[in-house]
Image (cartoon, rainbow, N blue to C red; front, side, top):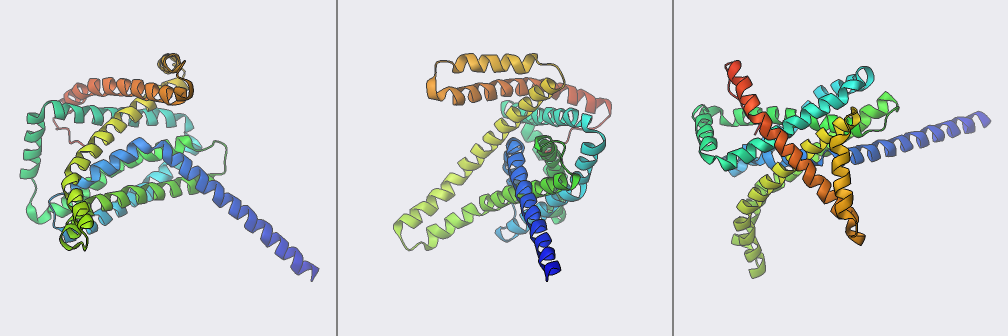
Amino acid sequence: MSGLLALLDDVAAIAKIAATSIDDVMGQAVKASTKAAGAVIDDAAVTPKYVHGFSADRELPIVWKIARGSLFNKIVILLPIALLLSTFLPMLIYPLLMLGGAYLCFEGAEKVWHVLSPAHHDQAEAVAKKKVDGAHLEEQKVKGAIKTDFILSAEIMTIVLSALPESQPLWLEAMALGVAGIIITLAVYGAVALIVKADDLGLAMADHGRFALTRSLGMGIVRGMPYFMQLLIIVGTAAMIWVGGSILVHGLHELGWHLPYETIHHIAVDLAEGTGELAGAVEWTVTAFLDGVIGLAVGALLIPLVSVGMGLFGGKKQGAH
């Protein structure tokens, strides 16, 4: 009997440790996921365009296909690579993170450039559409979305990895990365599904609503969705530039070049001084703005460099977005 009680005590202790570990994994995953907010917002802002133009009954299946591809990218391909880096080449994490940050700056600045030169953008879109065979449009759209997701997912997983505590067991790090990848994917593509079906919901409310308020709300959703999509694109672009710039500034700081980080910090602290309870918000806003300025400047410098580089290799830049 005493042996059975001892065994039960051991089982209870193991269960308690497992429960604590699960709590740690969930806490680390959620906290680390928030660090990737900028890339996540951009992912959610970009994906709906791949569903545009298809019939309503194909929208959710397409989103589901892209979501499955995104999970495969994160869990099967990128998670093992991240663990190998963390174990054998941790010194490469910040350089790779900065490379991804530079990519975000470039993509964000290129979107701004497209707004400033719409003729160039419209011409590129027209050329792309001519190359697509209607019979294979859905397959190509899904493949294109998954390729774009791979780039953003690599940045997201690197950000998550850099935000996890150091010197923890490999299995705990793997679980935290995996849970973060699943949480982010569900959040992104759940939001995308709601966005692409919002106009259908609005039409249903407008046509079949029992109350005038319901019908008016439905019409408001239908009329407001184009503006909401534009706002989402603007927010996503701003988030890319801000996060990209922030990654570069913090990466340089971690690698020993402190001037950009310290300059921004001092400016933010000086401007926040004397604002009382708003000091924290003012300091964060100024820091984010200056990080964004640096991100936009770096992205603007990269646009001609990428164009020249692609020209030397005889190719064309295929934007992820």
